[in-house]
Image (tube, rainbow, N blue to C red):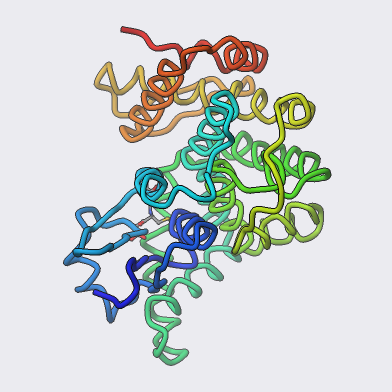
Length: 335
Ligand SMILES: N[C@@H](CCC(=O)N[C@@H](CS)C(=O)NCC(=O)O)C(=O)O
């Protein structure tokens, strides 16, 4: 498919694509970034099993989808520099934050993208340009109208509604404030080099930089987070990972308020609804009802985290951190 070993077919507007590209750059994996366009749609469809980006096509035309398994597979092929901190405790916390980014932070990113007219118009135009770089202005405007009409109703897929808006928006405010504090003393989430958590969060928060409302928030109030987003475009190892002792003061509050009190309770309610054969569910988050349609994917990702935790032989430190931050009980494997 390419003289380069790997081709990443994606979009600047796709958080999961940008996440994978940042990882490939960090690991120095030879690759070509190919924007998915109308012109190469047939090529994309030839390899893609699911209509989702990113799609990575590797040597021997091996087609890979789903950002976390892609990264895990590449990690086995390209071991240096190691993606995760050497401590099993920190490696688990990094995987937990990545999962939260993919499954929860995607909500505010997508919500702000398609909620207000200003954002809908700007993003639809950007997507139209990306899909058809050679088109003239009139054609772009025409495509943007149809993209906007198609995407706005999809807000419900991530649970964005008048009812859930306050929780979703407060969560992004909280995350950005906590990230800003945490990044005051370090270049990346776990120290002087990026970990899996950075790539996941980068994808979603970078998406927030591409839509006027959240772009104004980030540029206006969160300069360190902005620097981190810029670094994450092409991240470099610039020192060691830290230990929990130095991370705890500012990373603990993120675990507790975002993951322990929002993401995991949401995920448990979703899991129960899927098991009960429901189509929608209501979680009680921040004292408010949060109703949305079920996500089968999220039931798999919480199970993956439980299995990861169960595979750690000495879990004393990890479990103490998880318990302190309201994250332990949802992550205990139940037979
Ligand atoms: N779990 C997947 C999610 C991928 C995903 O949702 N991709 C979105 C864009 S960010 C997509 O392809 N949506 C349909 C489309 O753009 O055609 C991953 O981690 O790669």
